Length: 175
Image (cartoon, rainbow, N blue to C red):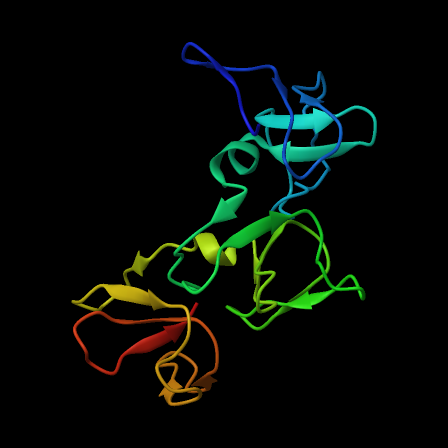
């Protein structure tokens, strides 16, 4: 299981699907460490940690992301499974959403077609606002036609995910 709650308080121990040892709420705050899920620095005491191997997760990352996703807009064909490391023998992967490579942190992976996505890319906000723009922007996990959209901020072609005007004007931005 990923989490256990006692009333309205968070349980003090956790057995996360992506870590072999039980995790607790460590005495130290974990500052100076990175979250094993998202890779971002740990800046507060809101974390779970493993004393056996110095592995830490933000409490939010440990509890909010499911071990599998079905019907996600980025990949509706097959379920995506949360992995603690890339499934590829090289130990690296290229995110099919943002196009960047990765080798650490949790990823979502499709066993059927080798679709890979950074943990955070699948959880980007679905809508955004841009200063001076009347309409909201919506997240496109892939441009409608590869390379057919240019970013209105930098004027470069967008080859991966982007935010595009929700009212069908041509305004678009890199993520």
